[in-house]
Every structure is written in C-alpha cells, then in structure tokens.
Image 1 (cartoon, rainbow, N blue to C red):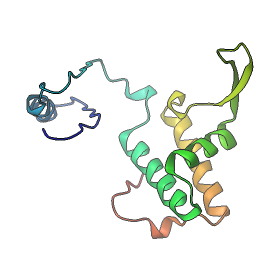
Image 2 (cartoon, rainbow, N blue to C red):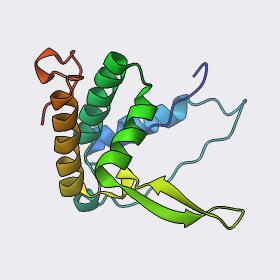
Image 3 (cartoon, helix red, strand yellow):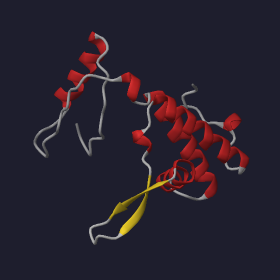
Image 4 (cartoon, helix red, strand yellow):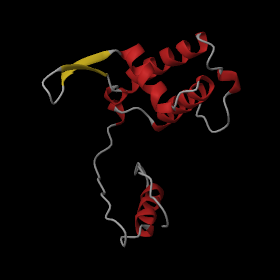
Length: 139
C-alpha cells in the first residue's frame, strides 16, 4: 500500500469479514514502518455502533462547515455544552477543566447525546437533516 495508512477497524462476524481483514493486512508494506494489530472480543453492548459514529461525525462536519469551525472544534464544543467537563490536575498540579469524552458513552448514552447535539444544532439554525448529503447513515 502506498502513502499514509489510515487506522482500520474490522468486526470479524463471519468468514468474509475475516478474509477482508487478512487481505488488508497482507497488503501492508512493512518497509517504511511497523504496524500494531490488536484482536479482542467485540463488546457490542458497550460501544457505539459504526453507523452511530458515522452519522454523528457527518452531522458535526455538516454543521461545522456551516458555522466555520473544524469538525474537531465543534465536537469539543458540543461535548462540553452537552456532557459537561471534569476537573483534572495538570502537570503543574493546577486544576483544569476538560471535556467529558464521548468515547466513554455506551450505545444508549451516545444515542441520547447525538439526539441532543442534533436538536441543538437544528434549533441554532446550523444543521438541517433534510439536506444531509449522501453517505450519512440513518439510524
């Protein structure tokens, strides 16, 4: 494979998915850099689905483009606005506020968070689900 390789995730739920994963790994060139491969049982109950994640980032990108933020900036803003913050101690021993991470949410919590994000952006006039571009997963 040429160029920079993106992080890839595979759910091995059948032999075809397993073969796609193996094919992908076999195409990697080890001449430039090593790769890390982690195999673990998939815990569907506690992780948001790929469809949820794709739809969320589509909404964030659409609204960010409308507002003038990057997708990561808007993601951070929405995380703080909807989930809030935690106080942690920085390396200098001072307390700092950090956004609660969406990756800590289970499927149900993430669905609720996503609904609140979408509602907030629609009410603010920065997102219209009727004009979603192709490629967005609809749940």
